[in-house]
Image 1 (tube, helix red, strand yellow):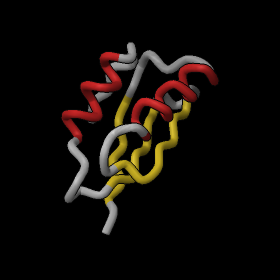
Image 2 (cartoon, rainbow, N blue to C red):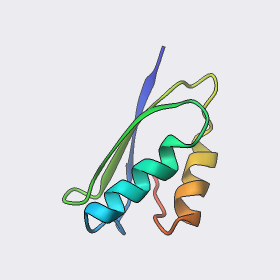
Image 3 (tube, rainbow, N blue to C red):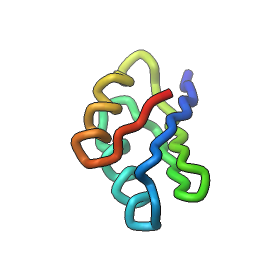
Amino acid sequence: MTEKITLVAPDISCGHCEATVKQVASAQPGVVSVNADSSTKLIVIELDPATASLPAIEAALAEAGYPASK
């Protein structure tokens, strides 16, 4: 069973940012899908809570230059 998490990422400002966020988050274990929207500054991540680590996803996004939080 998957779970959807919505994060706020104020530094997403363009299509390139959206693509980078999707690539970084999708590479994390347990992530099923990622949608990033620069107009709303939101990232919606569908994940498997048994294998995904939200702190690890947030750390990877911050390392890529897109800090995000609930």
